Length: 162
Length: 162
DNA sequence: TTTTTATCCTACCACGTTGGTAGGATTAGT
DNA sequence: ACTAATCCTACCAACGTGGTAGGATAAAAA
Image (cartoon, rainbow over all chains, first blue to last red; front, side, top):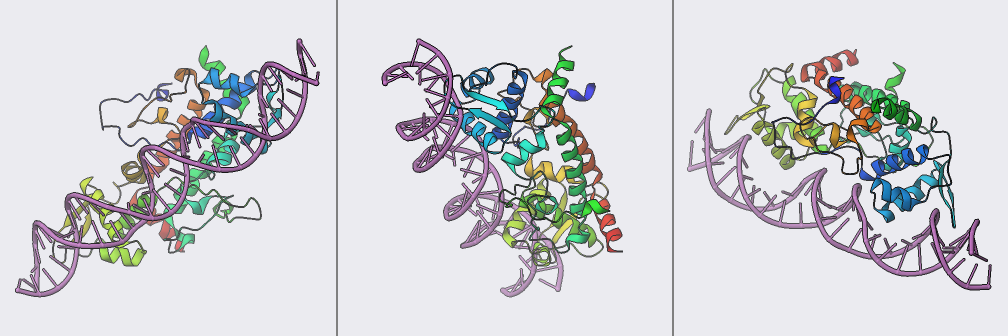
C-alpha cells in the first residue's frame, strides 16, 4: 500500500501546516478508542487515559464531560468510577465526534447540513460551481467518516499490526 | 440531484459553523473564476473584481498580489493595468489555491504531503487507525480538488444555468 | 463516618490566526 | 504632468484554541 507512506521529501519549507481536526477532537477520538479497547474492565478514569495517551489531564477531563453530555459516554462518579461507552463501538463514528467538537464538516458553510448558512459573497448559490465541488467533497468525506466507527478503527489497527 | 439541496431543517441551534476554507481562499477562487471568465479583454483591475464580487478592495489587493507572487497570475502595473491568468484555465485548480492560502489539505498533520509533521500524541503512526481514515479522505479530497480547475468550474456553472 | 478517588463546574488566560484597514511608494500609459 | 493601476509596510480588533486553577459534589471502601 504505497499510498500510505507520505513522509515529506525535499521540497517546500513546510511552514503552514493547518490540519482540520482540532486537538480537542483528536484527544476525544484517542480517548474513545482507548475506552472501546478496554471495555471489559471497570469504568476507566480520566487519569489513566491521560497518562497512557499523554493528554493533559484537566483538558481531557473537560473533553470527556462534553462527550458525556452528548450521550456518547456514560460516567460513574466516585471511587472506582470513570467512563464507559454509551453505545456499541460499531455505533460511534468519527463524523459524530467531529461534529460535536469542530462543528460542520465542509469546505463551505453553504454545503453543511446541520449548520447551514449562505456565503455572503455568493452571487447565486444555485449555480455556484465552487459550491458543487465542495458539496461532492463533503458527501464523500462524511460517508467515509461515518464508516469509521470505533470498531472499524480498532479492526484496522489489528490488521496493520500483522 | 436531490443531494444538492441541503438547506437546514429544524434541528440543532446551528452555532458552531466552522468551514475549512478561509475567506481569503474563497475570495481568491472567486477572483480567479472572474478573471478566467473575462480573459479576452484587457487585464482586469482589482477595483472591478472588488465591486462586482463584493470583496473588500484592500484585502483583495493583497490576495491578488500573493497569487501573482505564486505565479498563478500575471500583473501589469500602471494605467489600464491589472491581472491576467498566468496559465490556461485548465491548468489552475482548487488544490493549488487552497494549499497556497490555507496550507495543508488534510484532517491530520501526519497525512499531509507538503507539510508533514507527526502527531505528538501518536503512539505508533504506522498502525494508527485514525491516520488511515484521514489518509483516504485526503487522497479522495485532493483528487477532486485537482479536478476542479477554473475551466471545470466555469463549465459546471454553465450547465447549472440551463 | 471518614477517607479516598473519582466526576463535574466555573472561571480565567496567553497566544496565534483571521480578516481586515491605512497610507503611501512605484510604475506605466495618455 | 496626470491618472490609474500595482505593490509594500505597518498596524489592529476580534475570535478561537489549548490550555490551567480551584474547588464542589458524589460514591465506594475502610
